[in-house]
Each structure stands twice: as structure tokens, then as C-alpha cells.
Image (cartoon, rainbow, N blue to C red; front, side):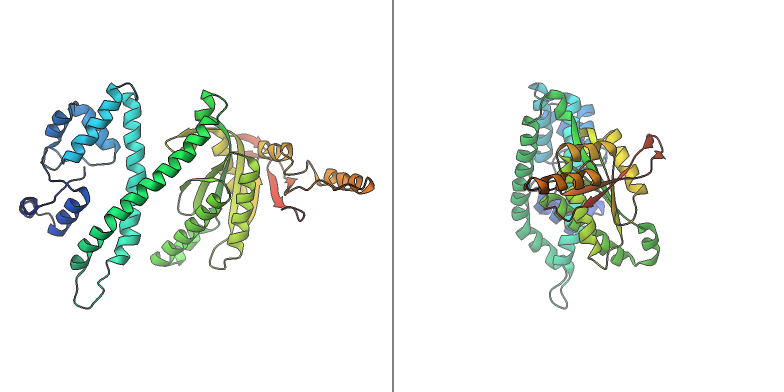
Length: 368
């Protein structure tokens, strides 16, 4: 579990235990409280069992520390708050542990990114002869309150958006099991690239891909679920939004000579949401379609294609679209305008899902 320090007394403690003095000073600055408790003392002070306290700490992603005096008043307060939510009946014990786990996993990744990619660059010594140690502490001291406020702001914004989606759900079941469009975007030949490129160059490519994908997903009304290096998973409430995102991803990457080809697979149907992630047959099908999609192309399942046709984002067939256009021209009316085109592909068996009929998704010239 995270430990804390904010004064010379704990510096001496750290020195005795062989801990780095700068690391202790930074920890004290960030946590803003002194080490006062062993895990047992913290649990007792919070009024919770040691077993429950350990479950919370492990769920948040912190290592067991035995009975070292390494915890702070903030750790006690966090335990007390979680336990209080359970006692008040607002959360079950299992849900409280899940809250701890989801918060810990999300913020752990954020913290790692900020240190590795952000603070590391800022703390490069600005003048010859200066050490990173001399630069790091004042930089963190200046950034900490600003980053904290920004984190809370973004969290509240995201919470408001998520709450809005929940209250619009048709019923209680739909809050957890919802009909969504799910898409995977995958860089082609990434394994070969890892053998040819230097680590730093590969890292820059992955970061550029993730950044571009995240921006496009958000800007076009989707939600980025997670990134997996050479692959991103996103979701949207409707098939038209997901289709627009997929094609924009393909088009944007195709214009970037530094990027390998991209392929996208999408499916529409019931999806189970847990801790910000998505699960179920629909997700598995989208993943399988991605693996068989041609380079710089988008494959969708039958349910996705039917949803685009139902919402009049795509014609049932090009022959039908041509017939509608001819009829409209005879009657002096504007023909229907479809954003997307759908071309049925050969049916094929997909491991674990039986035989599926993929559809190739394209953008129509008359689309918006």
C-alpha cells in the first residue's frame, strides 16, 4: 500500500529503512500527511475489521506491507468512508470493494502515465550541473494542486455524462445490459513492427495511434472503453455513430504515412457493462470480425447492418437505392440520402460463435 511522509522525522525513518529521501519527501508532499499507523491500527481507528481493510487496500491496487507503520490519517478516512457507505446501506460490501477496485485501476494507470510521460519530461535539469533531484520536488509542488483540481473536474464531467445515459435507459435491466454498437480498431502487422522498430519509436507510434483514436471516438459521440497498444475498443449508443467513427478512423490513419494499415470490426446487440468495460457475445463478435477484416476496411455483423438499414443510414441494397433514386427523379422529388453502404460478404465460421455473415461497411458518395 502507498506510504506517506511529510517531515524530517519520517525522513529519518526512511533513512533507517534504506528508503530514498527524495521519494519520501515527494510522498509526503503528495499525500500531505505523516505516517502514523500500521494496517492493524488504521483498521481499528476506522472501525472496520482487518479483513475488510485488507480487501479494500488490495482492491485499490496496493501491496501488502505487513505491520509497518506506513499509513496516514487519509488512509483511515478512506476506510471509514467506504465502510460508512456499507453501514448506511448505500452500497453492499461487494459493491464497495468494486468501487475501490475500479477507482484504483483507473487512477493507477493515470498516475503511471503522468509520471512516465509527463513529469519525466518536465523534470529534465534545465541547467548544466543541476540534478533531477533538485528539480523534481518544486515542479511537483507547483503541479499537484492544478492536476488535482483538473482530475476532479473531468471526473465530475464524466460522471454527469454517465448518469445521463443511465436515467435515459428504458428500464433497470438496460442500465447494466444495454443494446450498444461495439467496435474494435486494430493496427495490421503490429507484431512484425515490434521486431523492426526501436522501443522508443514503437512507443511513439502506439501513443500517436491511441491519441488519434481517442480524439476521433470522443469527437464523434462514442466512448473509448480501453486501449490495448495496437488495438482500441469503443462503444456508441447507436450504429450510425459507431459506423462514422470506424470510417473516420480508417480515413485518418490512411492519410498518415507513419501509421500501418487499420482494420475495424463492429457488432450491435446486448452488452453487459461492468467497471467501465463491456462484455458479452456482441463484444466477442466484434473482436472476431476485426481479425478477419481486410486492411483499411470495416466489417460489421448482420445485426449492425440491419440497424443501419432500420435507421435509414444505409440502404438495404444498392439495387434498392438505385430504384428509389429513379422513382424520386420521375416524381420530381429528392431521393433518399444514405450515409453508408453495405455489401454482404461470404458467410464463414467464426470460432466460438458459429457461422456469421459479415458485411463490408463503406461511405457513400452522397453521404454527409
